[in-house]
Every structure is written in C-alpha cells, then in structure tokens.
Amino acid sequence: MTAYNAPIKDMQFLLHELLRISESDLPGRDELDVSFTQAVLDAAGQLASEVLEPLNATGDRQGCVLENGAVRTPAGFDRAFDAMREGGWTGLDCDPEYGGQGMPYVLNVAANEMFVSANMAFNMYQGLTHGAYSAIHAHGTDAQKAMYLPRMVSCEWTGTMNLTEPHCGTDLGLLRTKAEPQDDGSYLITGQKIFISAGDHDLAENVIHLVLAKAPGGGEGTKGISLFIVPKFLVNENGSLGARNAVSVGKLEEKMGIHGNATCVMDYDGARGWLLGDLHKGMRAMFTMMNEARLGVGLQGYAVAEGAYQNAVAYARERLQGRAVTGAENPAGPADPIIVHPDIRRALMDQKSFLEGARALTFWGADLIDRGHQGDADAEGLVSLLTPVIKGFLTDKGFDSAVQAQQVFGGHGYIEETGMSQFVRDARIPMIYEGANGIQALDLVGRKLAQDGGKHVMAFFEMVKGFIAEHGADEALKTDFLDPLKAASKDLQAAAMFFMERGMKSPNDALAGSYDFMHLFGQVALGLMWGRMAVAAQAALDAGTDDPGFYETKLATGRYYMARQLPITATHLARIRSGAAPVMALAAEQF
Image (cartoon, rainbow, N blue to C red):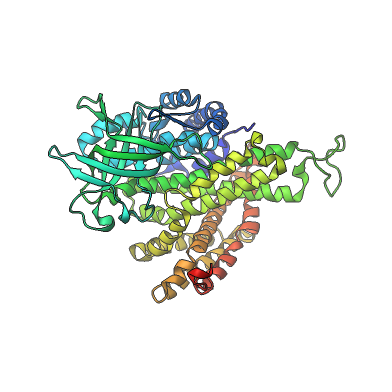
C-alpha cells in the first residue's frame, strides 16, 4: 500500500521565499500572504491524501469500462469528483465572471501537483477541462463563453482536446476530419480521433469536445485547420441539455498506465459543432490549450515521481538488509535499514534533488504565465522558450526518478501489491502525449531558439550571468553553486553557438543534437533554480529561523545536484558537437 503527504513546506518556501508572490507587482498578489496560501495548500493536500490517493490503486486495478456506448469510471471516482467540485478546485484560477476564484495560475499549479501525485489518472478529468476552458475563454464569442464556461469552471461539464487521428499525430496537416458548413452557422463534423483522454465518462452531465477539423476552402496543411466546439449532448438556448450529438466512443484503449482515465477512440458521424475562433485559424486556438497543457504535463512528470519517491524513502527507512560498512547502526536488530547504504542514498538524493529543482522550475514557469496574462511580453516569450524544456526534460527525468524509486524496493518494487509498478507505468505517458519529447526537442531548437530574433534565449543567458555576478562575493555560494552553474551555462551557450554556426548549412547537425540540447537546457535551468533556492535558504538561516533543519537540508540537497548532476552538461555538449554524421551513418536498410 502506498501513501502520500503533500510537500506543503517546500511549496510555501517556493511561493514566498523564492518567488515572493505576495510582494509581486501583479494585481491581487498582495492578498496572497503566507497564512492564506497555507490554508489553500492545506485543504488541497488533505483532499489529495485522504480522498484521491486511496483511489489511486483502485483506478489502476479496475480501469474504465465501456458498456452500451457509455463509459463507467472506477468505483469511488464519482464521489471524489463531487468533493473536488464542491471544494472549488476545478475553478481555482478561473475568471470570476464565470464562477472561478480568480487566483493566480501558480497557486493552481501547486494544488494540481498534489492532485497528480495522489492520483494522476483521476486528476486528468478536470485538468483537461481547464485547457478547454482556456481556449474558449481566449477565442470564444461572448455567447459561447456565457454558455459553456460557467459549467466548465464548475466541471458540471468537462472538456477534451481532439487532435490525433489514426494516421497522424504530430503532423496535423494530414488530418482528415471534415467540417461541413450548415445554413444555421453550425458545422457537421465527420471523422475519427484517437487517444482522447477523458473522452467520455460518468462524472459530468456533458462533455465539451474541442475538435480540429478541415472546413472547405482552407487549403492544404495546418493552414486549413479550424477548431470546433462539439458537445456530447446538444445544448439548448437556456443551457439545458438536448438530444445526444452524433459523437460516440468507438472503444477504450488498453494502456500501460493511467488506467483510471478513459482514453477513447471518438467517432464523429455528422456531429453538430460550432466554430471556435476564426475559420482556418484553428491551430492558434488549439495552441492556447497546448502551451498550458505542456506545462501541466511537465508537472505530471515530476509529480508522479514525487509520490514514488516518498514511498521509496519510507521503505528505505524500514527495510532491514545488511550492515553499514562503517559499523552497525541498528545493533539491536538483525540488520540495518537500507537507507544506511551509500548506493541507496545516491538513488534517493538523485530523486530528491531533481524533484525539488523541478518543482521550482515549474512554479517559476507558472509565475511567468501569470505575468504573461497581465501583458508582460518578455515573460510570455521566456516561458514559451522554457515550455518544451519543462515538458520534455521534466518528464524524461521524472520517469527515471520513478524507476529509481521502484529500484529501491528491489524485487518488491516489481510486485504489484507495493504500488511501485503503477508509479512507473503512469510516469511513462507524460513523455509521449502533448507532443512526444523528441518533438519538444525539435521545437526548442528549430523554433524557440530563434524566436523573436533569439531575444528570449539571450535573456535567459543574461539572467544566469546576472545571478552569478550578483552573488559572486559569497565564497561558499561561489564554490558550491556559482562555479558549477557558470560552467554548465557556458556549455549551453556553446551548444547554441554550434547550432547557429552549423544549422543553416547542415540542419541535420542541429536536429541530431536537439534532444541533448533539451536536456542540457533543463540541467542548466535546474541549476539556476538551485542557485536561487540556495540564496533564499541561506538568507533564512542568516536571519534566524525556527526551522533551521529545513534550510540546511535544502542547501545540502542543492550541493548534491550541483556536484553530481549538473556536470552532465559537458557530455551533452560533446554529443551535440559530434554532429549528424554518427547519427545518420547507416542507411535505412542497415537497421
């Protein structure tokens, strides 16, 4: 049996000592004092640990069932969803005009981390709704907003994203779903979509599908794609539900993990839909959902690993095996707990240093999104640059961390009854959906580096350089944090320079190194986070604190990351500089 305890102390440290959200110049932030955010996080943590986590294994074992065209979710999910709705968690950062609470996105991210750690499959039902809400909020007409948003904020109705088709995933220009215009302004949508998370279920009265399709006159490729609102049940003018729309579940996918979430094949047989945004401009509207979703998927990557790590630590403290090489530490017992052994400590420190750095990076990204929503173009550009890093790097490393946590259990980790297998299986999908991580790397190198003339990547380099210069007089910080960060940042800049020098003449050189570059960037970004956290932790110790152990632990964990993880940037740079020749050396038939 697994357990979960929300890391609220660490979240509060990030919100108030790293990001200093209550001191921000953003509207309404002055109300977010320590006591207020503590109350919000405590309530979210209680829901996560007491309601959602006990259903995690249930959802994994039972999965979802398709019966007579309707999807049934695992036992207890309906009551848990009612509790989430009643607590207002589904609209935490949504617009108050439509029933939301209007809190910052970064606070929503904190709450959702807990929900994902406790039960990722369950949280996807409301998490995907939030993305659909955002797209309608940004691109819908006043009438569409009034009709759909209040019910989606409350999750009386849930939402989905319908992109992928059997013959096309990332290359959406190949999609075949058609939209035929009707005299009343609606469209008839015909086609099939696959891998649709939360595509149908029994947790809400209606499901609002956002569907990419091609309407006449749009031309070839992605430029001809439009986005449509296609409800499961048609909606009357007064908001009541009408007849069932011509959309159905063809089947439920049998998956490696996230069994508690209904992943559907959706069949559209002349289903009635309404244009969202401009005709033939559907990709712009869809990316409103995708950018938010990708940060959320990066969060999933480390949040599932957080749950696995907590259980690995508990097991390592209790499991007796062997003796410490320096002498027995549990002389009254037959053996010492395995946490005394250096290799177990290495595995746990790898996880801990990654998880805390990943949380800091994600919270910072969410704060940048908040600033972007308030019109800060520089913040919006920076988070656009960081989004593929957050999604790709954090999900890769999150899966690695979940595997390490399972490894701590030895053979018992491979046995289903301990629950560690589920963490590994659930952690696998974030590396794939919302744009597989190889695509994230290509997006980073092929698009984001050159965005706005390279302005945002240069701003990141200057940010790292400025941080190092600002704190260079602190000798302890310089040796343990600043010097490793400086070396890693130079590796990142050298890799970017390699792409600029070689990319136009030999684009394969850049693309062959893109995955390494994404990881190199991720390591530097976490290094910057650890540097900032070290400054905040040392400031708390210097000022006097009633919990010195927390800050001393933070500094020791940061030193581990800088000494044991960050040096990998040199390896990534060497791989990048090797160019495309070793990668492309074999002809297709030689594999």
